[in-house]
Image (cartoon, rainbow over all chains, first blue to last red):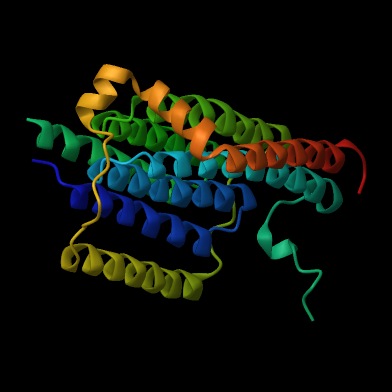
Length: 100
Length: 167
């Protein structure tokens, strides 16, 4: 029988993969996709727990996470296009204007 | 039978998540991410949340991923250079393994308890998941819903302003 712990373990593995991707990749769009992966693993935890506790609140929260992810995708990709226009690159190593 | 199916889908989800972080070309990473989204949608169906599965496929795999792939193709990105950051790879794998060990330790140690509500699998089947979510979102969670709509409006305006002209 599948318990809620199975789902939470899968979610933990996906979250750790997303963390590793954010820390090691240099392409800003890939970092962005890794953030989406982490958000999705948290969504899986929310839905598994809401199904386990037979409550609707977790699923409503997942909806708001999706809204924030959509807003983040729109603004983040617009920022990347602007950055690419100025620097001809999307490597995070080139985003060094605030460095001493 | 169900547990075999669960392990199969979990394996596909984790392997696709691994492809997201290992592929050199961003397009391949994006396709792996779409695969992970579909696996999570299968999980949502197994957890008696079919509406969330439909929203997952339409919003994530449909809208957000198409937007990301569109930007990748618009900027014509190739594979990134792979020979830098070897020290960073060691430290970040240590960090992510620590996160994984920590979370799995608490999952193994703790017990999920709490007040059980009335949204059972039987209620989802008899009323319909969409109706239950609609009732919750338009009565109990009305104010956060309106705030979310304003957030989306601000994001649309911000994206247009940022991408339109030279900044």
